[in-house]
Length: 143
Image 1 (cartoon, rainbow, N blue to C red):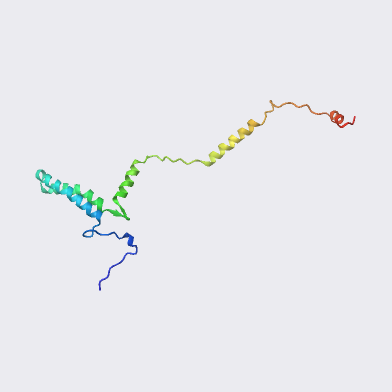
Image 2 (image 1 turned 120 degrees about the vertical axis):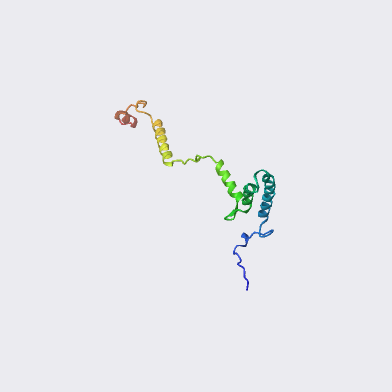
């Protein structure tokens, strides 16, 4: 009796259009044929059939691979887009980390400087005469 394996995740199954190819694969195959055949017929006159076939394959291959390639459920466009974005990025790392200990240390230094500025220096201190015991006794009314 014939049987078929059913995949567990049915969302991974893509609908087939013609001959086991998806729409994208079919369109890329037709585009590569539409590009390759005119090149073959135009170049075989000057370079011969063998070289013309190789030139045709070199032109058709990237278009065909672009439509057929898929890795980990991601198409070639995904990887090309990521590669182009990577190449546009700056080569140096723009992000710089902040050393929090250096920051806290500088804050401590600033706070110490502020405290030092707010305290009067001994040279600028106003001299207050010391109170004698006789003055205190007079004020209390005991003389």
